[in-house]
Length: 58
Image 1 (cartoon, rainbow, N blue to C red):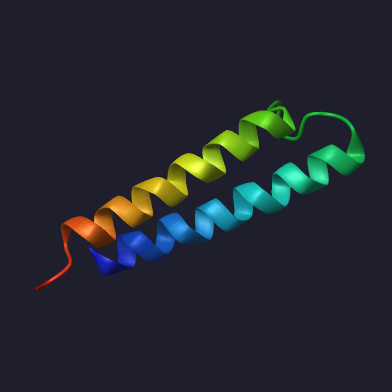
Image 2: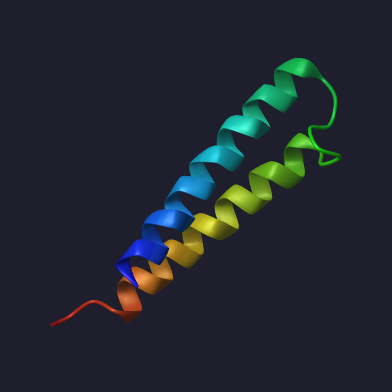
């Protein structure tokens, strides 16, 4: 499960970087607008946080 969290974090970082590049380029990357990349980045980060909270051992 911890590996899945790291994959989600890495994908979130990639989405953020693509969103920033998309803003500077001024056109969609892979057919997705920068706002879409930003939303995806946020959603993946929230999923990673939720998985960490759900699997946290007390």
